[in-house]
Structures are given as C-alpha cells and as structure tokens.
Image 1 (spheres, rainbow, N blue to C red):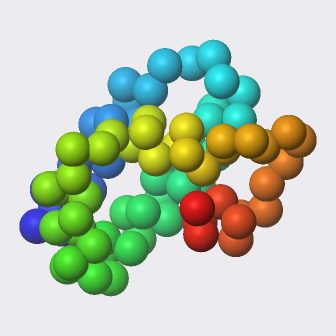
Image 2: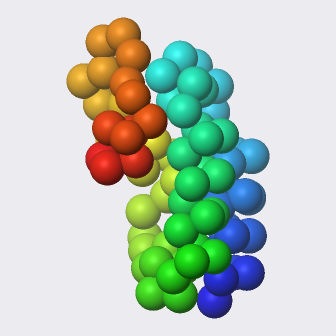
Length: 78
C-alpha cells in the first residue's frame, strides 16, 4: 500500500497546474512530508490511496486564506 500511495502522490505532483504562488511554494515540501507519513504508517498510506481527494485539493486547503507566508508546522497540520 505504501508504494501505491507514494506513486499516487508523485504522479499527482507532476500534474499540478502552475499559477497559484502559494501552492507552488509548498507543493514539494508538503508532498515530501506526505510521502514520509506514508512510509511511517500503513493506515495513512491506505487513506491516500482510497481517498477521492487529490494532492492539489490538499494543497489548496493548506494555502487557503494564506496572505503572506505559512510556517511548516501550520502547513502540515492543515
């Protein structure tokens, strides 16, 4: 399940449209952390695989209402 989740995240990262400066700023580090979580916890990986949400949906949620900057901790908790 971990490999499938990681593959899904990496493929979705490649398809994210450019444009939103905040998404562009956080997409790689957030994806790296999600991959790390997948490697640590099988249930997390399973949730990634089974979710109908995309990485782009996740990133848009992370940067929603951000006006300037966001700390790593705040991004990861969102």
